[in-house]
Amino acid sequence: MTPRRVPMDWRFWLVTLAAVASVAATASLGRWQLDRAAQKQAWQAAIDERLRLPALDGRALTALDGADAREAILHRPVALRGQWLAQHTVYLDNRQMRGRQGFLVVTPLQLEGSPVVVLVQRGWAPRNFQDRTALPPLETPPGTVELAGRVAATPARLMELEGGDNAPGASRIRQNLDLAAFRAETGLPLADVTVLQTGADGDGLLRQWPAVSAGVDKHHGYAFQWFGLSGLIATLYVWFQLVRRFLRPRSTAP
Image (cartoon, rainbow, N blue to C red; front, side):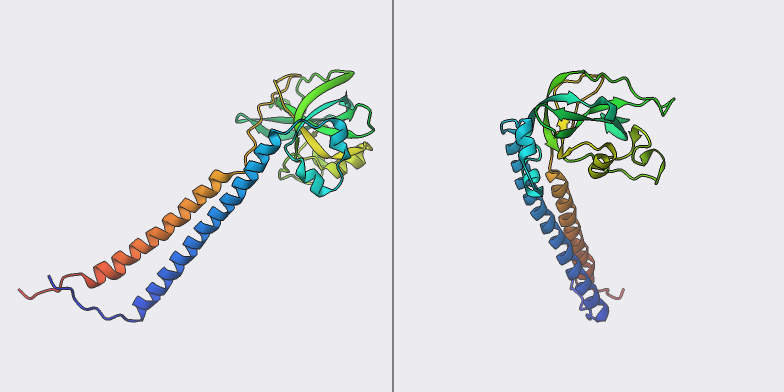
């Protein structure tokens, strides 16, 4: 079997250029995802370190000033004392826990010995789908309460329609909660951070929050896909443009 000679016309070089560019691009995207994974690993290590730090009390929580200071305490444990302002409780709709739709219940807490109020994400409650205006049973203890939690970002925003129950003050059932708008609506001196209440379920609420994760595995998965695509392009190029093109046996007359 003698390899035949095949002229390398402009189509061969065009395919070669496209293959080289595609392999370079997909490999570069794979490396970028690995870089992102390394950044997220460092972030995850910082989160894990914060979760092991001693709990902040109300005074330490509200003494911090500036966006950088608030960012530095994100995910820090807290131990708070104060009184619930139950009249300002809101129910954020379409929030999931353990694959079920329901409400994220948010209640302001008046800190003991301080004029500052902190929004607390108290837990999750199921929704009554037969009566979408019905509120779930909720126990809000009067007097001074103590709670454990961690500093958290404001609840994630969901897509919403204008007006209706999403407008400030329109309903206790809402799609989203904007901290500045809620401060103006209620007149409460709200802190610039919120707290996610942790611990056992109680008050009619579930607190089975997902573990705090920076999402490192996602970037490793994306990197694997990009490197796999890069390898596939290279393999197809070698097979169709080199192996089949140059090593096909020369045909002989009968």
